[in-house]
Length: 99
Image (cartoon, rainbow, N blue to C red):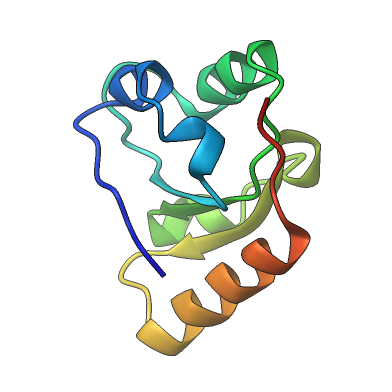
């Protein structure tokens, strides 16, 4: 696996990495825009990327339409490595589509 880190969601959307990305790993405190706004930006690029969101423990239980936004896992921070690895593996199996 290869990972690329971006300073903001806007930097990611402006990069050429969108087309080469197998899954997204996001924190809920994204600089620039929130997760639904990022998903809209990706949808505008015809990119469907499985997404893993890391959030505060209190936010994990909040009702959300996760799958509607392409979110395959919502994990409480701090995340155990094995849990994160399983979520990434699951997201990569679902595959993404860009372009």
